[in-house]
Length: 182
Length: 182
DNA sequence: CTATATTATGCAACAAGGTGCATAAAGGAA
DNA sequence: TTCCTTTATGCACCTTGTTGCATAATATAG
Image 1 (cartoon, rainbow over the protein chains, first blue to last red):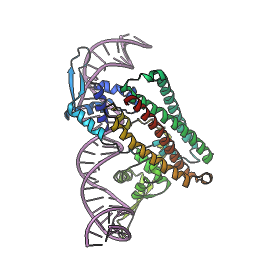
Image 2 (cartoon, rainbow over the protein chains, first blue to last red):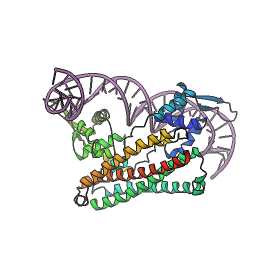
Image 3 (spheres, protein in one colour):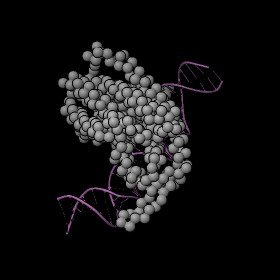
Image 4 (cartoon, rainbow over the protein chains, first blue to last red):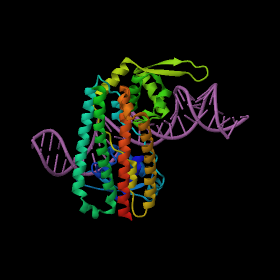
């Protein structure tokens, strides 16, 4: 039920093709959502069956035909209804912690490798986020940030604060592990 | 494929009933995993079919019979195989951000209510975590923390650092929203 | 000249997760 | 005395997510 509202949200901003929607997960939208192209196309035909979106088929001679999807009146209502109901808390699911629960003095190296890989990914994310922030959201640029971009920036900030906290936690875990299992 | 390893991890520590496993999500294990009882029982019978766990049926006159599950040799191997392969990065999915993407000058109140509800939940979590840390993980207690409890504490610290970062982000978002949409 | 990437769509099968319903006995609250 | 909670288990259905496969044309890289 979630991807549905992601797509409705994106289509309310701008009509586009399934392919455009899929690609949007590769850039800014990817800070807070991801889905495969199969999922997106399946969901789009379900939304179309439910009359929440319409599409115009565009003939292209060079490439396969494309469908430009747009939000219908009912779609808009469905989105706004969803916005009214407060979200319920999502359940925490952290596989890294599941793995670390298995830590003991015999597998310290294995756990340390896992933590190392995780740290590297996190450090890379941190660097990427920082570059993006500097390039597109300098204090000057922030002053004239268009309204529809504010929450994209907020999503980036969420990523930055989360990854910073995660890296701080990784430091703690390594200290804890060293103390407990030499 | 994830709940499977959660259950194997828990059962390697100690044999127990499905009911015990379900209840474990209400306490410490809940910091990093949650599952309904239906999910747990279904997964347990799948694990049993796959011979990864064994169970002893215990007759009870007053209550329904119970099954005490324990990890089998193959189960132990399966768990250790899983531990060897590094985890792949999980995909970010943040419904709050999806919702906030819909923020505009006409629905500021709605968005503010959502943020307020979220802040309250987070503040409550923060308070709960802090009480637990003070009660069970004081500096004195930490010195004599049993090895098998270290990662439970790490999970708590993860929760604390995450909720702190989340609350800091909520402050930022409210400032951003006020600036953008009055 | 061949292979891969990009644009653009989709089906089928399966795995995993969520929701609702059901059973059954004991104990405590109202 | 009736209802709710706790202990203890489970099925069935529906939705969601993942993986693999398929098509088809152009452009670019090696």
